[in-house]
Length: 199
Image (cartoon, rainbow, N blue to C red; front, side, top):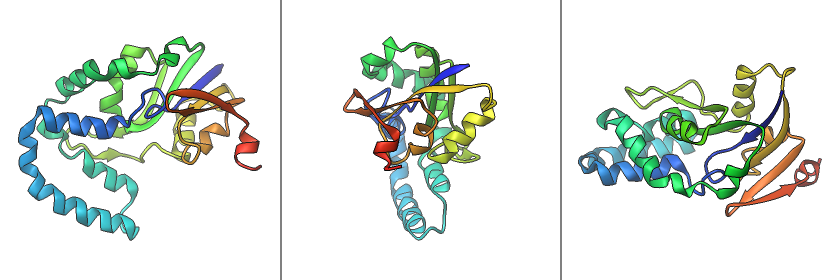
C-alpha cells in the first residue's frame, strides 16, 4: 500500500497546536490563571531539571498539559478547532492518496481535527485524559518511525511523499519517502534528501 506522511504542527497548520491550545484554555477558562502562582515555580524547576537531563523531554512536556483534568476537554477541543480549522493550509485539501499524519501533539487534541479533515490514519502522542500526562513516549524524531511500524507492517507499505516543516526533527520520517517536501511559511518546497542531509 502506498502512503503519504504528513507532520501536523507548522505543516498542515501554520502554528504549534499544543501551545495555542494552552493559550486558548487560559482565555476561555480563566480560573486556570489561579494556578499560575503554583505552576510557574514547578515549570521553572522542571526546566532546570530538563536542561540538566535529569528528567526527559517526555516528562517535561507532560507537565504542560497537567491542567487537562480541570477543563471540559471535549468542549474545549471542539471550540478550539471551530476557531482554528480555517487556518489549515489550503494545499492540504488538494492531497491525494492514503494520508498518515504523524505528530508529537496530543491525541486528545488532534482526534477532532483528524475526523474533520478525514485523515486515513492519525499517529500522535498519547495522553492520559484524566491527568494530562503522556502515556509511553513523545511521538517525535525517531519515535515517529517506531510508531509508524507499530501501526503498519513495514513490508506492506511504501512511503511515497513526506511533508514536514522540520528538517531537523523529521529526518527519520523524511528518510522513508520517495519524495520529500519542506513546508516553509505554508509553502510546499520539494527537496532531495541526500543533498539536504549531505549523504
